[in-house]
Length: 211
Image 1 (tube, one colour):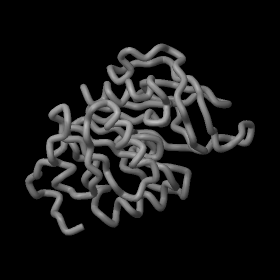
Image 2 (cartoon, one colour; image 1 turned 30 degrees about the vertical axis):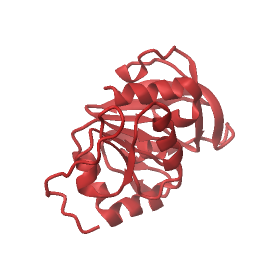
Image 3 (spheres, rainbow, N blue to C red; image 1 turned 60 degrees about the horizontal axis):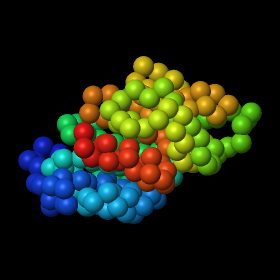
Image 4 (cartoon, helix red, strand yellow; image 1 turned 120 degrees about the horizontal axis):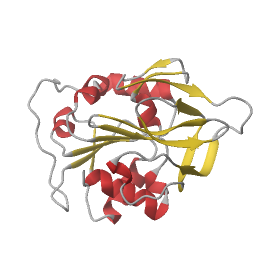
């Protein structure tokens, strides 16, 4: 990517609802399902790896399905590893996206973006890995969860997790209690897939878009 990170932002096209929503496109697997979920809410989103387009968005979604070290290499190859931590608008990391926003991941011994000051670790062998399916979120502590009940079920697929820490805004238990959502300033992260979590997941996406 040839853009310089210091260039002034250009604005992505306005979608339905008057918001410029960009989904960061770096080869992650769940991009289209997120875009469709946003469309079901009455909004439009664009897929982009363009620095100026991302900078000009009102809301940025940082998705992820895959392996941490290869995903970080893709971010580095386009300069997005430098861009994402500098964003000032609300940013939502989903699944691997949230994990890459952390300081370090045991998956591939990968240095992350360092937005959240916590390491990502692997589930131990006392539970089936990966965790696949529905599990509860609780200890909800963010406007992201407005209208979401304690112990609501969300859909998860992951082998690595974020331990409990001061930036946790939701927890889940799977052999160990861990942070299933994080928040620091304008950065939010969810380990679960809201785009695959029925009406409650769509409500969380809607809350994020309306922050």
